[in-house]
Length: 124
Image: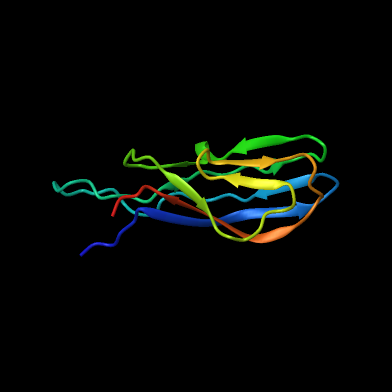
C-alpha cells in the first residue's frame, strides 16, 4: 500500500510590521518524491511549490496578488489551495477560489505568524 501524496503543506506566510503593510512570503522547495521507473501507472506526485518573492501591500492602495503560479501539479491535475484558519492582518483576505490575497488599502500595518497554505490535487 503506497502513501497518498496529493496534498503538500507549506508554512510560508509571514506578515511583517513596516511602514507599509507587508505580506512576506518565504520560499518553498519542490517535491521530494522520485518519478516512477516501473511500467505501472505513474504515481500521483505531490504539488510542487516554487520560490515565492516578498509581496508588499502599501497602505492606502487596494491591490491583489495571485499565488496560483507558485504551485503546480507534476501530474497535471487542477489544484485547490486552502489557507488555515490563522487570521490575516486587518484588510488582507484570501480568496481560495481565485488563489489570490486581497488588500483593501485601509487595513493597518500588522504582523501575524502561523499562516499555512495547503495545495491539493484531489487525487488519492
